[in-house]
Image (cartoon, rainbow, N blue to C red; front, top):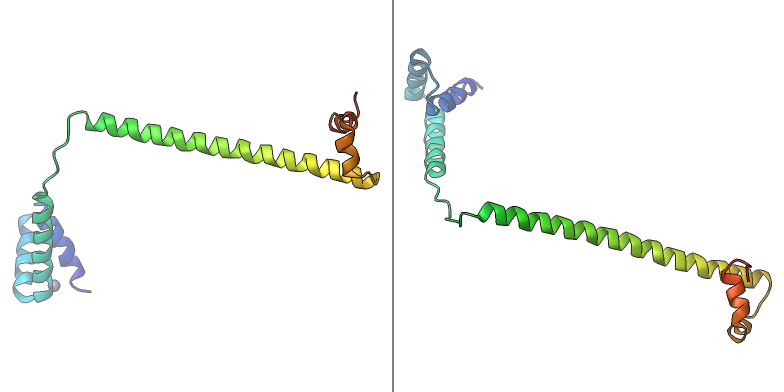
Amino acid sequence: MRHKKYLFLINLYLDKELDSKKEYLLREHLKVCKFCREYLEEIKKEKFLLNNLEFPSVSQDFDTKLFKALFQKTKESLYGLEFKIILGVFWSLVFLLFLKISLFLSFFKIDPLFLIDNLDFLEFLLTGGEL
Ligand SMILES: [Zn+2]
């Protein structure tokens, strides 16, 4: 791991943050160390590529449009979630209602067909016994 120190120095060197004494030490090491030389070349290449990246040209209001679109998308997904929760609660209540009716019917051994013929009685059951 004796290279570790030099790899760090190489990064400082490329950022031009190395004092002359350390730069001298690094240069001396690079003369004898193939590993660090290769690392330096690799980092140089990467730096060159990064510095020469071409950004696609975008319209001036690109930022505004992007943030609007993101905001809209977030809003939609939040409303979507709310809607799903409400739908879930609704169907849970419907399920509980049917469960209540079927339990009630089975408790009193009432034939469901009897209810279809006597809707007043069904209403009586659904309102919890208030007619
Ligand atoms: Zn080295």
